[in-house]
Image (cartoon, rainbow, N blue to C red):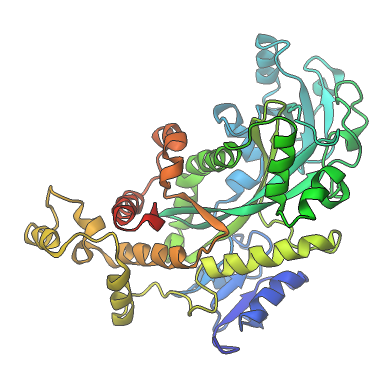
Length: 455
């Protein structure tokens, strides 16, 4: 791709070095106006009328993309997340105060002795251990969350969390990928139970000024051997006697549980834009804590995860890799220009040559002969002649993502074979809405039978 062949437009005067460098390396030109752009990169949610890029987003043309998903506040804003917390396995039990004060006190009495609690404000700050009958709970008047205290498995005597990068390349059809490395952060001080010393926040809350994994001997020795942060964490937990083989699949399935719950909202909001979900993608960081039994909980989801290594320079390598891999995954890498939503003869030809989920010509002819109503196969999923342009585009997009996901992204949805058993209950409880989801899942099952890399 020659420099300037495509251009991206950054919605904010962003000072993030790694983001700018990633695009410049790939030949992109940064613009500060809304004419002739391909990619609008915004650090914050741009879907509000007062945002400087809102008019440009509402007038998007086919093929233009924004790196945020409309409606993502439903799972990145903790106040909304708390509304579904009692109903999902992936989240610690959470109540909104003062609105749900009576509900919280009633639940705590019914489960007396089973849980301890912490309060935190909407910005995830001001964390403090409390009891249901405490004066602190009774006096809460501003929006505050009271949450089940997760007592962590410790490493080197410290509490910690791990951040998992998650890319959503579309909300309809739902397509989700998880990165194969993590951000690992430790508390500044050794753990002290917050019920015992609630004022010692640095001992149980991972703050902005955290202890990095290369600063602890337990993890540093593995990082020095060339392991990534996820591999180093798994090695340390295994040395402590924990079974870690199921850890990553558990993280993926809990991410999926939350996103399946939110997908109808995401699709509904995206449908309000001219080209629907095809105009948007996003990357988030899901922050997990593991309790003493290694059960993971999603503590928060970061809308625009920090990709600046100013405070922790060794993270530069991870951030650069994540950005480059994300850009390639969504079709903006050097392998070719971004896919255009409008079908062309060239795209039709590209699709037909890679349509590995297609049925044989005889079966497709039977579909055509029955106006695509054959009972023998799913005609839409298996035969190009029975698809609308939007259905064709959905398959083309997933073909491109499959080709460009590389070794660092793992598909979570459509569900791969190795997650089907673990994810079955969540898919049954909340299947994604929209006709493209079933079509794409059926297509990928057929592709898997012909090519194991699709499994």
